[in-house]
Image (cartoon, rainbow, N blue to C red):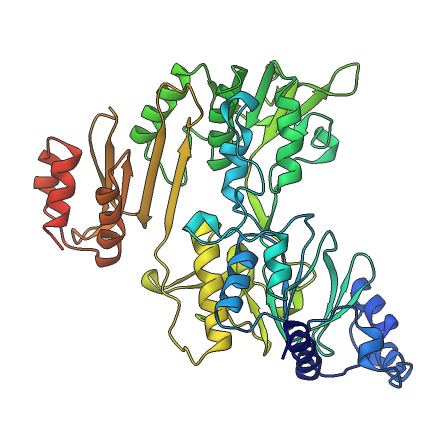
Length: 494
């Protein structure tokens, strides 16, 4: 049988697996307006034209499996479908982006380098190159029989009929649905200047392109937020030799992870690169100049910081809409799933940043916004869906950052963290270039470990330590004369 015939047979099987169902325009309108069942819904049901065949009313050819979202997790999910021989003629991806899934961390790192310093560009970082896999370009999806709908986000969802409606009005049918919608950048309110020209947020490649255009003309930039986005964007701005100021309300950078002592060392490095910090400050508003473009940030204390470009990095919110009815965890946000990424509704799954899942080793529900989890959750979910796997997802929290990696940089930064940052901290090293921080609980168990500028062997030790949580000799660790000695003391505890 030819590839085309196999694909056609798979599509027919996909349509059969997804069922026939009937579509009601009225029911979509009711759901968009928030109306429930009752007499109106019953009337809408009676008005459905069930004589129309499924093939005539559904706009996707591949209906057995549908992924909503085109980010990291979607790309790795697609790869897993292909590895199991279940993508061709069966899988459809619905994305709001204009390009296939890519490794999103590049957007705040290499993508922002100046043109003369070899910036990252597509197709160079399509998934799954970030984990050493194949570069999945648009051609790869076509060759593997995967239907991709670009620039057409899902706006409505009907779990009873297993149908979706996109922004362009397409009606899609699914047999199994994988929600991979990720997060949206938290924004400053429009009334305080959050949408002024020259104000940027970064979540996708179009956002990054817009920022690169601004950086090429900028003289003074303000970065709002001292977390991941803020620190990575500020480091990239140093490559453009721009006057850069970071403004945040906390006492130090990276407050969710860094200790004050650790933060101080990184702040000093940024200051050596010309970056200024305004700590403990809140934004009152962003002002525009005579041309309508942002010209300054006004702080709550009345002080003014001039800027012709502003980057806002104040966190992200899980993109649960229009899937709220599937079940949202009110504590951590996101769509609640079990340890195999199954939602409360059969045949519906959620993966990546949007999933609120059981963090098994710490016995709590968590939502992790990180590429490592996006990759691993996608693989685990799809293998559960396609095979008899019944193993619970057992994720070890992992974070990293790589900055100042552009050509000509005096020093490159690369740190990794594994585990949980709870308990007493022990810091070893002088940041020249290495430094390590260990988090140890009241029972002397190592809970988390951070390392800057480690070797590949040293970095590979970190997840072993964090997962094993060995009892360590705190006195020995405190007396260690080098990072290497401290890691050896921790290793000997395994």
